[in-house]
Length: 159
Image 1 (cartoon, rainbow, N blue to C red):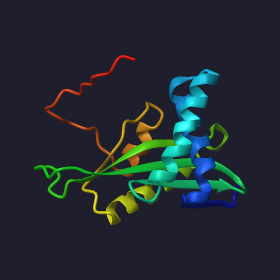
Image 2: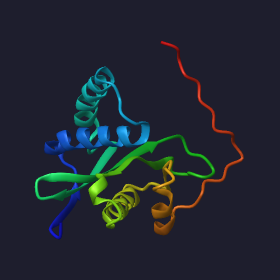
Image 3: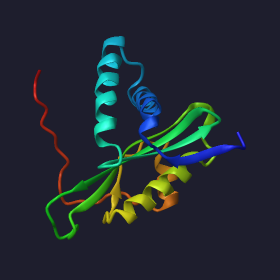
């Protein structure tokens, strides 16, 4: 494990991005049924090639040939606002490390790489939704609890 390689994801990494995104889903939601996994895999195999390097930036850590950790940065351009005069913001969509590689500083290094990319791209901030396990890492890096006078809400369409 001393020869870990950290790098930005390229098109040849699509399979690793899909695999680790599914690992993230399972870690967050528990096991998923085969039909759901097939649906997610199909969408991800279309999504990543269409977005990678445009508004999605992946960062991977490898132990040999094995991808062991990933961060996905999503960059958005929105209309200007008081808190975002440029309109450009970032969101981390997945931060995942395989269980046997956790608590070794891997995710922290990838998060810092992704933050540097977001800064280079002109993002005014990067936000994320932290799990209880991940929150201490993010706070150590400099993330703060998000305060807002807004109430988070969602409208879901019925299928």
